[in-house]
Length: 241
Image (cartoon, rainbow, N blue to C red; front, side, top):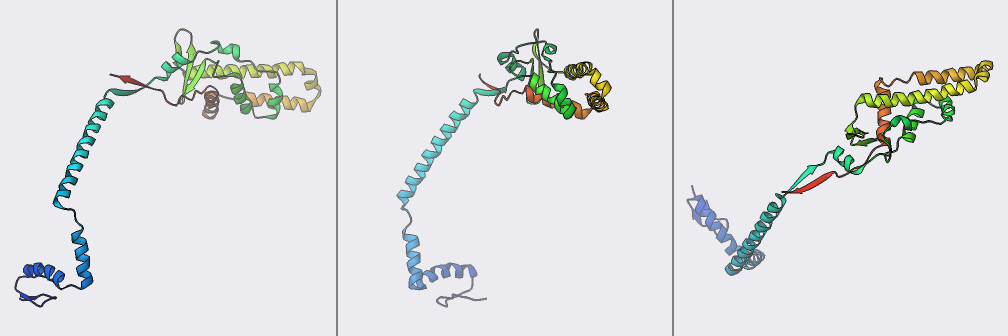
């Protein structure tokens, strides 16, 4: 089989020979514009000396980068990041103003007026925010964990039964205010069906609060956490070995 060059019609029996010839023949027999383009593309290349200088420069830059990376890795290896325990942070930075929580569980008589007009749990959670101040209360919340201050052990994780005692005690104090209101207004209650019904409805609202129910427990705990929450964004310590 014969192969002919498209530029000069020269005949070849080997296709590879034709390709090598055609590449050169195309340049030799191309148009003036094509020859100009070829000249421009081939005459703008760096000389051998310039190529050597470029390679040497890249080699030096690569060496410097490796030295910097090695130094950085060596310095980083000296430092380890350790998360501090929240209890440690609390022990070192926070001391409550009082320890006996029961002494702080005081609600005003005016709470009864709110109980008449508002939902019992709304009043209860607002009392939590009013009573517990993170700067003085022996309770603290950090990253969804609750801590309780005990004089002999300082800050310790709170157990559910501890919070239940607090919630039940606060509930009892609110109930006592309602009972005190009833004693003070006993005559009016006895002579007014409207007032009697209002009191009984309010009493039932309070009695229906059960902290063993998941929804009530979650809402009460969340209110307490928000009241005594510490925003510690970066509890880390760097240790040089």
